[in-house]
Amino acid sequence: MGARDALPDTTTPDGHPCPKARRRAAVALHARACDATGLGQLASTLVPYALAWTAVGVVDAGPWVAILATPVIALLMLRVFVLMHDCGHRSLFASAPLNQAVGFVLGVISGMPQYVWSKNHAYHHATNGDWSKYGGPLGVITVDAYLARSEAERRRYRRARHIVNAPLAGLMYLAISPRLNWLIGTGRLLAHLVRSKLAEPGVPFSVHASRFRTQAWSAPKEYWHMTWNNVAVLAWWAAMSWALGAATFLGVHLVATALAGGGAIMLFTVQHNFEHSYASATADWDADDAVVHGTSMLVLPAWLNWFTADIAYHHIHHLSAAIPNYRLKRCHAECAELFTEVRRLTLREVPAALRCILWDVRARRIVSVEAATAGR
Image 1 (cartoon, rainbow, N blue to C red):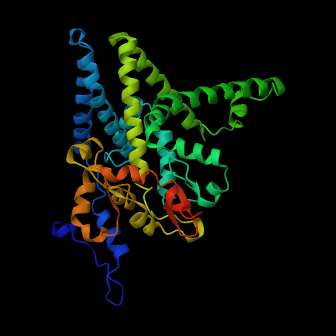
Image 2 (cartoon, helix red, strand yellow; image 1 turned 90 degrees about the vertical axis):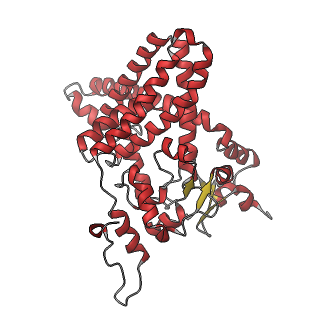
Image 3 (cartoon, helix red, strand yellow; image 1 turned 30 degrees about the vertical axis):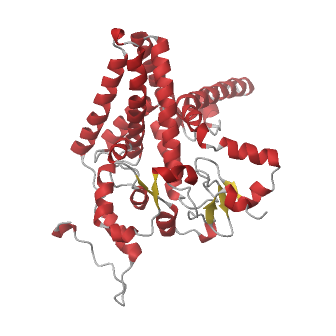
């Protein structure tokens, strides 16, 4: 760090270092986005993504090109999703309009209504480590609730969260659920408007619409974002099906989406679900403890760090979501001594971390089913 980037004084009045203040001062230095860097990241992602689809469309190339291109497209979709995530935090670009516009485009490519997703994701950041409010992507329950279930119910709980189901969950998450939620919600909205208009014909449609409640969206802005996302996604699918043939496009796209979505779910899960990860009830929750002891750092090969846009430095991201992905690694390197207690996870340890699917309320930590049931 240069002289202008020096950390401010973070000692207590009696001269002792204050780790919490030092961590927050350190990450604040890196919470600066750059439009040029963000555009460079966008180009380095979308150009190879377009080239991979171009290769699939070469008529004489045969099926092997499509087969080989599918995992590449999946990895690039994973990077698209992380960059979309950064736009939601307004950290990919310094410009708010760029974050909004690019976030929408990346949401179309990944299949996710970006604005609505980012609102839900913000709740995760606000409640990280408070497992009374947020149970993670797997819907973690307490040890006592698990033990109170029948053996058949326990098996279903474990099966639904097994690593082999990740691709199917990823396909549902990115390709099916956003379309289905929109269709069901729109159908219920139309039914509500018809019933309400018949019951109160003198009341304007806008008033009837304002009285409609659904879990699919919380405000009209969210609904219209979902609508335009779905229109754009379906138009893109139709155009690609026309250009490549429906069987070719859907075959490659759905498999790539399943792989990318499954990878995203596993990535996000093990960043908070691992052996003895911090898990508190609301009354005793501490945001700093949740970052240091409830958020992991994934030790990944350089090529995978690129495809995941350095989100492996997740402890830095949770200290300040305003830090762009392209500054996470440097922030960690310059302040590594502040994060010695953060749990490191290698790829080899990921399957074991994914087995940590229960919340031990009394011990205030996440545990595996094996640990929770040992001796019972």
